[in-house]
Image (cartoon, rainbow, N blue to C red; front, side, top):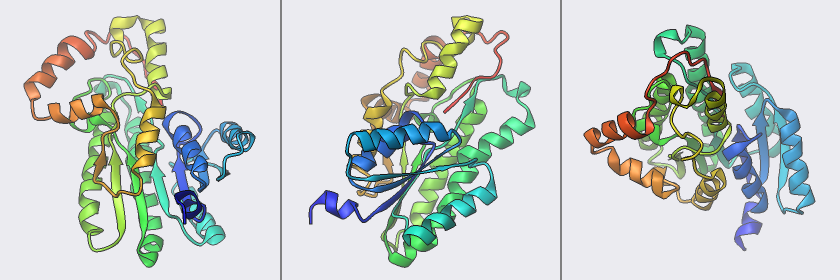
Amino acid sequence: MDAQAEHSRKIALVTGSSSGLGRHIAKLLCKKGLHVYVIARRKENLIELKNECLDEHLTGTIHVVSGDLSDKSFRKKLINFIVKKEGQIDYLFNNAGFGKSVRFEKQSDEDIKSMFEVNVVAYQHLSSLVLPYMKQRNKGRLIHTGSVVAFTPLPYFTTYNSTKSALYGFNRSLRYELKSSNVTSTILLPARMKTGFAESAYDCYKKYGKTMCVNNFNKLAGDPYIVAKAIVSKMDEGKEFVLPTFKAKMWYLLRHFERTVDFIMKNILGPKELGHVDEMEGK
């Protein structure tokens, strides 16, 4: 049996798939022949993705489900719906998320709660919902989109940085719990990418001036398609983490050299002043 025929029997769920990294992951999975459930709030973007796959005669199938992943009841209904229809979920790609750039003391409690709800709690909740089905079949892959900021300072994105650190710890601990099974948990650790998140920072340049935002955010950002290719090609390997690009590998190594990282953030990559920066949001 060839790989594509084998994948044609498999079910994947990709959250945050209306744009950026999630969209590329979903399309690559469709190309491999999987049945892919794409989740996001922007239904029109998901329908556009489905039509692209149909127009390109890809061998897989895109199933569109729109909803708010910050809603606990929606998350439960989502997993129940897929399992009832398909009988299984082979891959869970936890990818939805957002960040806001703001001085920490000016960030509201609601913003902090909502960011953790989408970036961390939803990942954990969805994982807990699919794990019983994966364990019952003794196979399955949990894949979480983290970031190299899990071990790198990111001023004015303090809460976002914290959510990625939480995911890193979650994945490491969960792997030990899954050690006796064929179910695995992997965290993807990309460097910055040209996604909605980066675009939001770029818009801030126009509104407030370059020195009031993270310097050269978009200029130094990588291609999310390359990151998507890396994780899809390794999705069956069950690794603890995937560093998809040279920059990601570099930042991973630099975690051992705190003074070097501090110098880079203070003098090269970090904002020199924040001024009156408002919130920036993106995926």
